[in-house]
Length: 119
Ligand SMILES: [Zn+2]
Image (cartoon, rainbow, N blue to C red):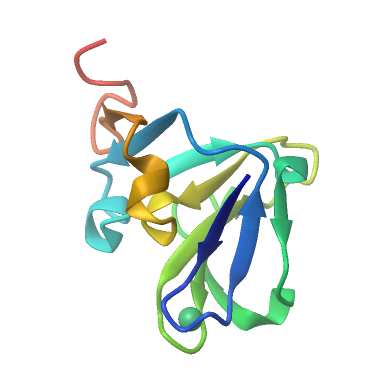
């Protein structure tokens, strides 16, 4: 289990396990957010705060909602628009650095080739 929180604590969630791998994507939105993504099935993430604590942003094909805390502005996660999609992204920056220290970091070329760099 790993606890995550935005800076002000309005958005909190618990992950069933610490991330093994985190992804740094260079697409136009991820590079601006500076987020590091860890991917989970929605049932592996338990939000302990209300859904209305975030505002969302969509772009491109509108397949995901990028969530940010209404109070402190931290980008906390993204969620799929299609409820059948069993994948969401957690911003690993919301976790204690100790929790992500052992995770491997990989780079995704979302800006161009849509593939992992160096794999
Ligand atoms: Zn906050």
